[in-house]
Length: 232
Image (cartoon, rainbow, N blue to C red):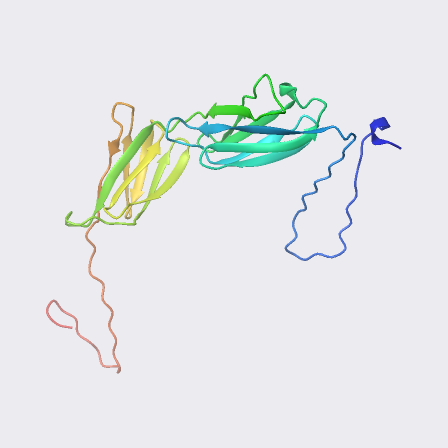
């Protein structure tokens, strides 16, 4: 029976006869072609959070023939192509592109051109909503504030979660954050602040606190050892 004459649901059964404990799931791609009239569709464009701030991540694609696909966007450049059935291929309402915005932790729908072409690439442009419109910056110093502290872990908590960064070779750090109350943690210290568009970048510096000296003592016998201010 020709599939073009079949209107019921289709199912497939996969029997696994050999596996190990590392197999947790199986992705099954099951293409069914009911016609030889297939066209190659191409989409290209840029995705960003604004000027000089490109998007990087995955987009989910729903194809007009009922299939699903995904594409990776590197440095804000989308270049995607797919072979789809000719029927409905040029119907823009049958295409959907969705991308996950990690800054809002939500998906955003990309606008598909109202008129599509199968002879040339179709353009997709999208600017993601970016709530990280403010900045916090600062420098980490030693206890005498004479030397910077490079490569130190820094945690910044804000209304959308938390982000991490490192101080650079000069002990400096800088990170985009939501314009809101924040808490910065570094070198076992914590500082609160409120950053707004008028106060951005908010400067929060840290100086390492003095710590008592630590020493270890090794002895070869059981004789007691006296420790005072002058002698060990």
